[in-house]
Length: 365
Image (tube, rainbow, N blue to C red):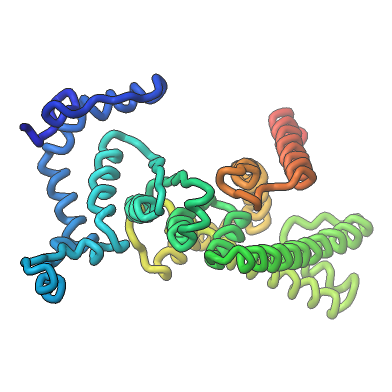
């Protein structure tokens, strides 16, 4: 009897595969490259390091004294429950995900019953920066709620926009209690509603006041400093002070949100841990560089808004797709009216971007 897998994927007389045709190319690729990859020195070294330093192997052998006395035998327990995540499953998933990486895969799909294998898979995926999707039966989800919660906490998806920053903040409030989740989602909705609308009101007020005062008096203002200085003689010191304060508040808010979003994105896309202060510094460097280069802040502001308008669909469209996916969101998927309104907004953004491109290329912008 041979207990080593051969080139055809058999262990002695055992083996073979009964799989859907669409899965055959993937399984065949694994079969043809398995022995090559697992035999590489670098693979064995990385796997051994993970098992030793991350999983916590070798686990101890425990002599069960009372059990041995009861059955008049020497009974030893291999303490695999001391492995990281609390079971032996992670020994397997470490090898699987290292193998998947070397095959050039970017996403791991797993199936789990009790949830422990799903937890182990999600854990190593989080360590290696790979997307992880775990399928689980409805009854198993109810029975194994703590494991489901662990998998969800390990599988956050982060996108470079303030919309996804809010999503990230909501993820930190996840619990296994559905009532708590509903309460947190309601409070998050209130939080986002007031935060976004207050920002809109402040920004809109500045634009409306500026347009009414400057355009109404036939003035051409091409910088933020000029706007402040021109507003003072026209509307008095208090109006100029309020305008300056609102501008400062808007700038601080944008800088804070931008830094936090960049910090979250950076932490999500790299495969190793970077101190939070370094992540924030890296996020702020482009803005600091623009200021130090002496670029006109007004021109930089306008350019940044144009870039943002083109980047917005890349954040909003995945958000709509994910939030309307019943497999991912369950009972929290978008309602019909929400979905319609969301796609209408997406269509408006795309249309306005198309108009902007037309104006730019025809020299009218």
